[in-house]
Length: 455
Length: 110
Image (cartoon, rainbow over all chains, first blue to last red; front, side):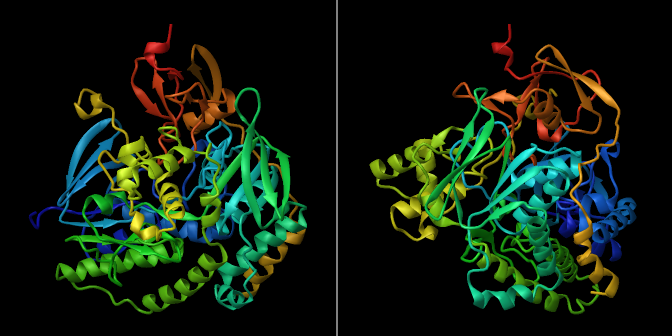
């Protein structure tokens, strides 16, 4: 690794672009690798020009922040080495392996800021692999980036703030919406004050709920999903759930599933960054110090890929990581006026949200044996349970090699956390002792012809 | 929060639900399994096929239609084929003129 190699940022959402802004202000020219065609991440994801709408229409209350983000991004563009539509498929100290429009390449780095964001956490409701069933984030992307709804009669099943936001956006866009919240977010009166400390963030949530109620949208808490039924073409056609002992079947033409968010951490894992189990978020997260330095040399972490805390904290943590980097390479850096205080306050609200919308562990433990947990390889909950009991093993990587759960194209992104909960529940073991799936290259599927450089 | 923003928070009483206005857009024909579908320029292959075909490919190990899931290139359940046999991920590929796709692998096509 020479000092000549560039600083590389992976991700161009709020965290990545905030980090880039600090580095550019210090006179550096970072490489910014973006999976999308233009900056924004998922939160400020931009439609193609043909399908564009006003910022107010696209981002609602966040329009102002979206405009500021866009302005920042375009101002930075001449001063960064921006690589749109580029994915990282392997990472080693000092090197990233990329694929860009079917062409593989190498990007060396002297310092690396990972701002890889988060994705939906899913519970594999039996029948979820059918056409018409999408992740909650996916449902929002269809609307935001492509002015299209996943269906006209949509059931939103899951938990967490995003469930209310996307339900609201769909109802507003003319869809017939039913919102089935798995938990009981306001059942703990002791959590109300910490929630209210969220100020505007909390007010927005209350607004979405009030809007949904005022417009006659069915919003049922304490609703456990049982099954997604299909029509004769195999498409999603109904949603069966249990609420206070009563089983109900709702007709629908689409389902969105989202049980909170999980950090996208594969690149950090390949680089040997240490992980810890975050009890409240109930997921493995990469370890970083208060400023974002990871345990691997020259690696910094920011945004939801470090810890799911939302886009405002993501931007602050991106700036913090870039400033830590500047300090480490001996450059002067601007002062962090009050940022840590803002992050701490936002953390308090986030903890309250995590308590209000916990991941429903029992819903995973109670999964029907026929539920397909790993949609790539078709491994059912029953197969995972049978493998665990016949082998006597509960370590997730061993279970993977026995029954292929997590071995498919998505690299266990969707099924890994579910399989871990199943194994822990079965053995009445601590979820931490089950471990986490080790990341493997290629992180995204890569046709052999691409790797061979023939295409 | 200033006054104007505060008032905006209560404006919901006046905003009725409305249909999503799809701006009239340029359309493009895409060939899927030999049949032409009309897609909006600017949309992904996933959305075009979700709306016009209903599925993208079959699950590898059973006769079960799949139409993607995450729409953010994480789940990898939306790969299909160009007619030349190369593969394409539907959620990150935009429709374009002259695109010819197959929902079946080359060896299963007649």
